Image (cartoon, rainbow, N blue to C red; front, side):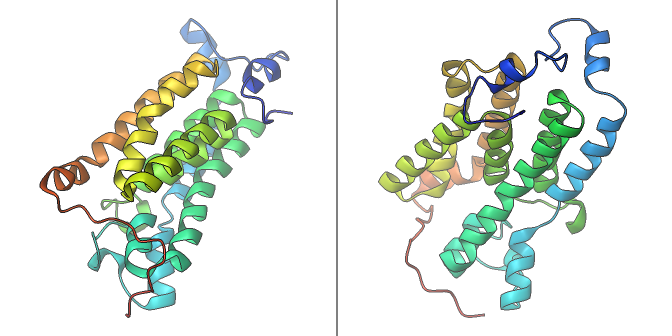
Length: 234
């Protein structure tokens, strides 16, 4: 089995030759066969599906880009239309990071799984199906990728997110703190170095995409998420 609840799964499941490359370009080429290109393309396409946009458009007849913060992420859906719409979008955004990571790992290899997860996050940020316009901020999708790569790291980040959100009621603050905790969790759980590299770049990406939220926090204009908000009228 490739995955289990043990964060050392990578080290234990790679003994049959599907090892993380440690040095040499030749080892990288061997670890990422041509079939990985298909996995990466599929992951990007799945990541490009704008579930927040589609859910609100189909169920409410509203373009999510015209309400709230204008972002097509789950947080804007939750703020504007409530948890009834926000929670399913979060789960779908997590799934589009988790599924390609898992499938690519099982079908091709662990390096391909990691790259597929990154491709899914890229698709969420710049979705093909919205003309490469500005997409979501990759938080939920990143969580899904880590759920496939390192389950305990994903769980730790989720706990950090929930605890920070419970204290502040700011989804942006929770996302920033959780993202910053990723490399620390990777080191603490002893994950392989490619996961550490991924976590560092993922954390930086999430932090950069939240720079507007940071500016609003400093100005005191950032909006808190209300857990029991009634859905807005179309």
